[in-house]
Image (tube, rainbow over all chains, first blue to last red; front, top):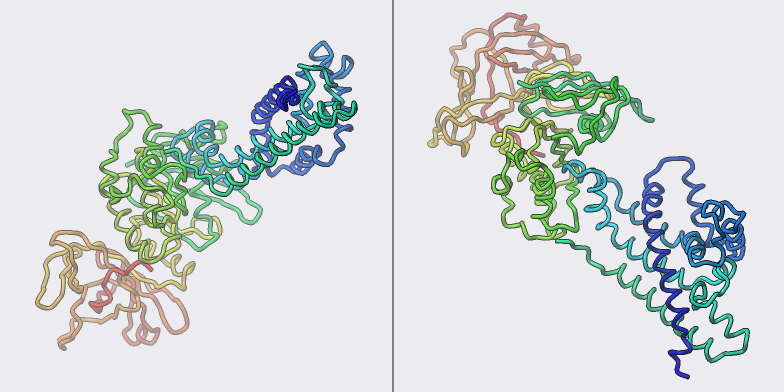
Length: 224
Length: 363
């Protein structure tokens, strides 16, 4: 039995799809939220900031528990969907969005704060509408923030365990991801398989972070 | 001639802006006043970057803001070119793409200003393919002005565009601003707190203090007004004359200037005969003489003048406002005023040292 087989390709595929979906949803939801946080003078700003940062300090089981209740057939999200989302891939994406939120929002917020309003006003004075200015001026200048947000959001989702187990269970091909696979291997004393996957994730995570730090240092931003 | 009508009443945490302005919108209008007088805030209100809840603004026939109707066009819908204190160029584009950013966003039929024209006036042809961070401060600001011009604006707003530059770059840029206004006929509103920029650029001055307009008029009217001295007393009081070069006396190193039928000498200027030249005469450099004097004098510049008004300034001196076809101010001692028995309406001669006529360099 080769190392590749130990890696459990279906779990890898679920992990990657989950991380990708989570990042896409978070970019769409997170961009306006991060922009608001970067520029608002509202007194609710610290409240929202604290809520966004909550997953960093909260035990994953606590988040997982509440999301599980919310997604269940009698929970608010379950009622909207008219079926239980618990133990489904969709439910896992919803849970991951909450769990990985700070890792996407915070780099974006920092980037938007660094860009400031000056380039935006300059773009307006050159006849660019708000959307146009955001897409052609703000986004490229905040590109590093986006790269950090995407990479960190992706890697963090890949590494989540507690929330996945609570909300998704570990259904092969649907909600079984790499991190839960390791746990199951260990439970049945399959240390060598657990080791293969663990080593893969360790190296992968290190390389991702290395890439982020290198990119942050010398990524030149040029469009033309 | 189209007019600029603006009324903004807005309270900020630290100060209040209360503007009621109705002025011809042609030529170069300078918003002048000390820091914190509301110049930049007023400019931002004109652009729509700040929204006064009690506000109205009309440029020519176009109403851009009328809060009674809840109307306030965002900046990107106003035909305004805006140059900020800092260049604010887009770092991810090169010079050419920065220049074309606004140009590409206006309809083809509204493009009155060509790229070649702007590149030529601003002298930035050799920079087009450069990256922004490879430009000097002065070059960046020229590109920023060019970028604004290429939107073919009907009104150009400049917010202390020279403030962040060193002396040399300032001197380099002032002629560009003068020339682009001459060449393109776009009304300019220019914010400045540097007296020398005003002397060189302004046709009309709006004097601001603590968020209010305290003086408005043609450059020389404002410079010679009591409000100007009262509010900016520490600055050198004087008058500005727009003269025409009559001829050169190169054997003496002098240029002869004509102003409303009278003549002034100035050190030789590299300006052709017939060209206009703006000169500044400090009040302290003007001496008054009553009646025709027969004694020979070394003073070359003697202008006939009528006393319009005598203004008390401090214990020992007074300002005498003269009419030489335009206002001119002479600062004399109170003792001389009494000795000569000067009165409004009286005809006098104003003696001016030739050396004082030089157009001052931008500080």
